[in-house]
Length: 308
Length: 253
Image 1 (cartoon, rainbow over the protein chains, first blue to last red):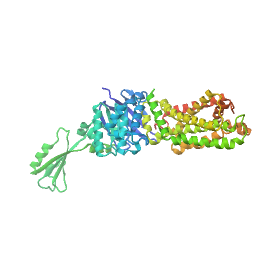
Image 2: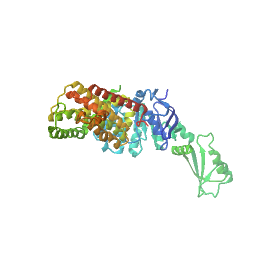
Image 3: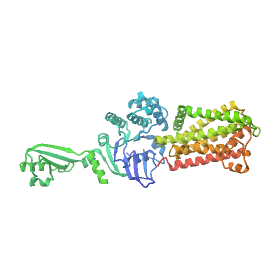
Image 4: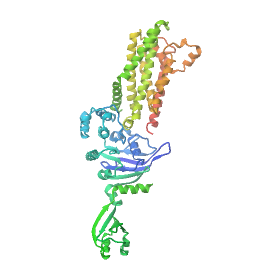
């Protein structure tokens, strides 16, 4: 199946000479949840803004649903929803009016029943006649989501949807993303929170300095880059690592009670059996063994660090 | 054509007008009534007729134009400047709408509001002075064309303006001298020849003169020339707007 969003050699340079995007290629499959991770200023928002039509690209092409975003902007923009990072809302409009306004802008006839359902889903219905300036930050975030859903987009961009949002609302938001995915909506979210990507994304893209460093299935990424650590707790502390154990590259904890072994979990031979054999040969008594997998966060820090 | 989007923008802008009824409708009416009391009743009663028309009646078309220009420029500019300032412009830019549709929505609403205020002032004026409209069709044509042209001009200012200072530059500093020196309160025949010649470089002269002609058949310049001038300015504004949207000037960069 053709990707729903296809980005080819996309660049954006500003008059100041700053290159926000340096030749990005990316395919997004229909129905998936893609998380874009990257530090501030990595180019995440610029990329999204170009796809949505807010920023003009310097070069490159983007198609959405098979249509070019510039030549066929009516087609592409009517299936794209955008929830921006900043809480940009009119101060003096009511919740109901601003959500209906978004629907109209996208060329859809008024549908009060749909707007009502969206507002109820987002627990905003009792605030429908409230002026936007009287809403809290979390509610404004939900209003922005309601606006983006008001015309039932097929591709939804969530730019830092949970920045500054409390834990319970963040969980609600994740559930909403799940529901949307169940309805076939493709979701692209940018985030700072690695756990968010780890929790809900199918694929993860890492972007830094205007370049995509990698895009991988979440599981594959974790397996590929995930280093595992095995910690062996000894019954009696050691003063130094015995020579027979030197091939394993172990590190000894300060008090000498723990040996730490690093291995690649996806490698053919982890070396665990031979290590355990070597330990017993050396006459060391093992009290406990635990293993730990590096998180996406470690992977991310490693990648972004390399990119510098 | 995305008709729903045009309707939405238009309705949104008109709703803003309703929310600010006091400042957008009541205040221009009070200001203009003051002009009529001072220039029409108090001073005008001691002045000679101008080309067979009482002074109060003579200045009425000019006063309507003054208000119309100011209203249209400020509405047109504010309508697009405010979303830019608030950041809500992202929604307009990411919607499936063309430049033409955005302009119809915003400029249509600004012009409508200008025309409403202009009409109210015309009615107000008729309470103070005798108003006759000899060429109603031409009067409406000048009225509507001016409203649309200057709303579009305001729209451009709204896109260009970096801050509120620049936004207010035209309605506060540029339009009043042009209107006052454009024969709103006098016939340029009353000026010395040098200033008469200078006045011909003032575009507002053509508007006021053409508009006044449609009321009383008196004019400083040929009404056809007036009409062509307004149309020419409209074409210039349309071309600049088209360029703005084509290049994304100050909107998409």
